[in-house]
Every structure is written in structure tokens, then in C-alpha cells.
Length: 65
Image (cartoon, rainbow, N blue to C red):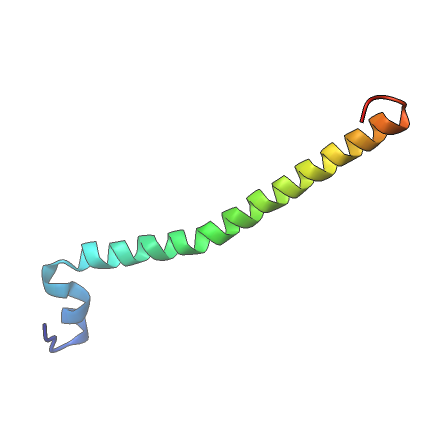
């Protein structure tokens, strides 16, 4: 395809809404995934730390490890 102006390029032969919408959706998802993964990682570390603290307290109180 050849475009003679920037507006023709953006219009993508009448399919610009679909094309740019797909690019936009993918960009948002690619930005969101690392942020969500970092939050899940922090939650997992907090759960591990909490469990270790519970086990240490139980062990110190004479309970089963």
C-alpha cells in the first residue's frame, strides 16, 4: 500500500480504527502485565514472610514447627 499523506496512513484504507485499536490494546496490555506481575510477586513474598513468622512463633512457643 502507498499512502500519499499522513491522514491516509492513519486511516489505513478505512480500517484505521481496527488497526490502531489493536495496537493500542496491545500496548496497554504490555504495560499492565509487568505491573501486575510485580504486585503478585510482592504479595507472594509477603505471604512467605508471614508464614515464616507464624512458624517461628509456633516454634518459640513450643508448638510443632
